[in-house]
Every structure is written in C-alpha cells, then in structure tokens.
Image (tube, rainbow, N blue to C red; front, side, top):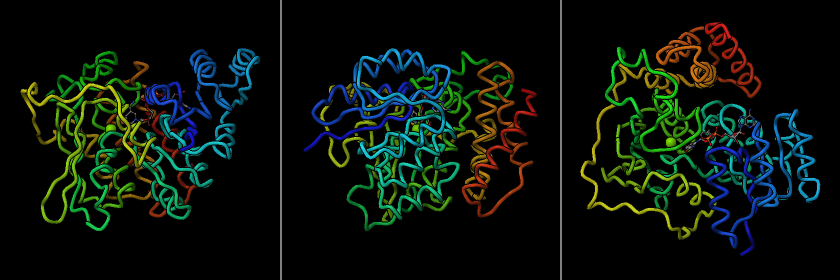
Amino acid sequence: MSKKRIAIFGSTGSIGTQALDVIESNPGLFEAEILTAQNNDTLLIQQALKFKPNAVVIGDEAKYEKVKSALSSTDVKVFTGEKALEEAADFDTYDMMLAAIVGFAGLKPTLKAVEKGKPIALANKETLVVAGDIVMQMALQKRVPIIPVDSEHSAIFQCLVGESRNPIEKIILTASGGPFLGKKPNYLVNVKRDHALQHPNWKMGAKITIDSATLMNKGLEMIEAKWLFNLHPEQIQVIIHPQSIVHSMVQFQDGSIKAQMGMPDMKLPIQYALAFPHRIPNESQRVDFRRINIFGFEEPDTKTFRNLTLATRALFKGGNLPCVLNASNEIAVWAFLHNRIGFLDITAVVEQTMEYVTYIEKPNLEDYFESDGEARNFAASLIKI
Ligand code: NAD
Ligand code: MG
C-alpha cells in the first residue's frame, strides 16, 4: 500500500497538530503533503522542517517573507493569501484533505477539494452548517467520501458501518455540557473568557471551546449531522453526558441502539478518518469501566443555554438561517474572546441577527456568501466593533 498523502488545512490548530502526531506515529501509512496556517508562522516553519511537505500556505501575507526565507534551503513551496488556499486545494498531489480550518474560512478550500474529487476528513463543521446542501450535493456528484472527524459524527459514522441497508430511526448526539453545566443565567452573566476556556474533558481551539460552553457547538453539530447522514431534523436528539465516554449513538427501526465509546481523545476520530476503512493500533489511554463511578445522561437545559434553541430553529427552518446563525456566532464569540461582550450577549447577538437578515429558502453559493457578510456586519454593529 502506498502512503496516503494528506493535505492538512489548518495544520497549526488543535486538530492539525494532533493530526501531525498521528502522521508521525504512522510513517509507513501517511505523509504530510500540504500544510496551511493563518498566523502562526513559527509553528508552520517548524512543521515544514520536520514533515517536509510539498507545499505550505501562510494565510497572513505579512508573514510570507519570513516563512519563505526560513524554508529557502528546502524544497518546500511557499504560498500566501486567501486565494492560495483554494489554489493549494486544487493541487493534484494529495490523496486526502483534512479540513481543520476553523469557521467559515474553511468553506472555500474544502469545496474546491470536493470539486476536485478528493476525499475529505472533515473537522471544519462550519462548512456543513453554512452550505451543507451544496457541499453534500457536490460530494455525491463527484463520489467523494466525506468522513467526519468531529467525535460525535465519527461515532455515528462508525455505528453505521455495515448498516447501509438499515434506515436510521434517530441519532443521539452526546454533549459534555461544558464547564457551566448546571449553572443558571444569574451565574453566567458574570462569566469571563478565561473561565469559559476551561473545558472539563477536551482541549481544543478557542472558538470551539467557547461554543462548547454556550452549547452552540452542539447546535452546529445537529446541523452538521443533518447533512452528513441525510436526516430529518426530528431524527436528531441531544443528550448531556458529562463523562464524554459515549461519543454518540444511533437508534435503528427495531429500537436497537449502537454507541461508539472511547476516551475523550481527538486522535482517535482523526486517525479513524485518515485510515478509513482500516483501524490502526495506537497506545492511547483505554476506557476502564471498573474505574468509572458515574456514567450519566440528562436533558439539556435549553432555557438557560438558549443557543441550542436558536440552532434548533435554524436546523428546522433551513435555507440561509444556519449560515446566519454561524456568522453571527463567529462575530459574537470573537467579541467575547476579546472581552467586548458578556457570555449571555453571545446569544442575544445571534438571536437579533437571525431576526434581521432576510430569509432565503433556497440559497445558492453566492447567497450564502452574501448572507454571511450581511450577518457579520449586523452582528458587528450590535457590538460596535
Ligand atoms: P484552532 O483554532 O486550534 O485551529 C484553527 C486552524 O485554522 C489554525 O491552523 C489556523 O491557522 C487556521 N485558521 C484560522 N483562521 C483561518 C482563516 N481565516 N483562514 C485560514 N486558516 C485559518 O481550531 P481547532 O480547535 O483545531 O478546530 C478546527 C475545526 O475543527 C473547527 O471547525 C472545529 O469546530 C473543529 N473541531 C475541533 C475539535 C477539537 O478538538 N479541537 C473537535 C471537533 C471539531
Ligand atoms: Mg464534537
């Protein structure tokens, strides 16, 4: 078997660095072909020197010269700018894209890779939240597999192996509940950035960590699941499972439920997506059921964590509403991370933006870009940034 050449879009992030760990542990199976980063030139240079990819892209053009000169004694090609991401996605030389950019910025390069017929290991959930219909349609047309990396969706995907003839009755997405599980609005109103960044079970990038604390992450994941598994909104249920051992479940028409379990470690879904359909051995920590005292499930508190209600509304209504939800959430989370707004204001910004932007029932790609821009501008005007 020849080595699978992986293009990691977002190689300096939490998912990207863990993917490089997986590649390093399996040198006979994988190699890094393309690496991209937005700002972190130092880490991108280190990664390039170590993994010797064919090409790197540094998004921030001001950092191009530094990256170029640091890699001048190597064969690594260096590109810069937003457009270069799409150009790199258009390369022939890789076998699979790991889409690990955060946010809306991941959409264009991922779509380009799908158009090109490249299999996708998808971490960037925002791509499907914004334009799931277009991306999945293109994937179907090009016969491109989209293998989820998000742990919940990887769990569902794994539960579905061997079940292609058996319809899904429903899926049960588990949520840890984040650092503020059980808290009420009178507590949340005073929550600060550093506290919200402390996730109990997972170490992730800043944006998704805040989304986990507000439960928006689970809302985005409901929409992601709808597109990945071709579900009706009614078939998607969210349940809080604070231990993050059951990564999600599928219920079939006979009432039988399959769950995928494991320690909360993103390297597992990452390596599963890269190696699919094979499972490759690793040394990661195993679940020991003798040491788990509590293993629980509870209903989410949607009165307190209203983002989940807003995302459910977007899930049911469809059209450009999920795109608007996502864009306003990106702006609001950015503002919260910069101490410009409070924790509960995130929901207020998203809700008002969803009411403001004109609803489009069947948007095309251009409509999605416009709705994204309009939502960002309106959300920013609420925050005055
Ligand atoms: P991160 O913030 O740690 O890393 C983001 C990466 O994207 C970095 O390499 C950064 O350089 C790049 N990037 C940021 N803005 C960019 C832009 N405008 N243009 C091009 N590149 C840009 O994020 P992460 O936690 O690794 O998450 C990445 C994606 O994976 C997100 O969509 C997230 O929802 C999803 N995800 C992450 C985890 C996790 O454990 N971290 C779990 C499930 C899903
Ligand atoms: Mg997840």
